[in-house]
Amino acid sequence: MQINLYATFRLIAGQRTLDIQLAPGATARQAVIAVLEQAPDLRTHWVNEQGEIHAHVHGFINGNEIPTLERGWDTPLHPDDIMDFIPPVAGG
Image (tube, rainbow, N blue to C red; front, top):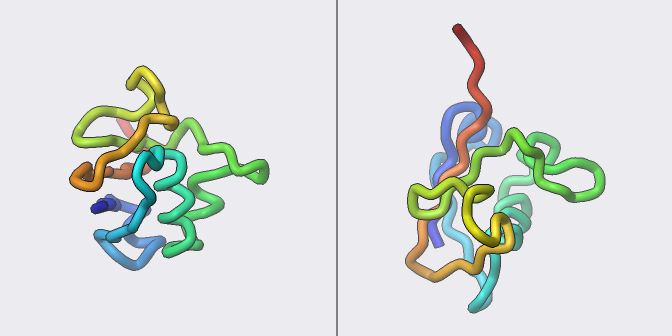
C-alpha cells in the first residue's frame, strides 16, 4: 500500500512516500502503526502517549478524509488504496 506524506510530515520522516505491507482486512489505524514503525520520528506528531491518533492529523484514503468515513480510522483497507497524510495548516 502506498502512503504519501506532505509538508512537515515529509520533512520529519525524511521521505515522500512509503510502501507498507498490511494483512488483508487491515484498517487505517493499523496502517498508521505500520508507518510509525518505518518512520518513528512521526510518532509524537501523530499519536499521543496512549497511542490515540491526534485530531490534527489529516489522513485520507483515496482522497476521502478518514474521520468522515463511516468507520473512521477503523476503515478496512485494500491493497490498491492510497493514503495521504497532511499536517495541520494555519495562517491568515
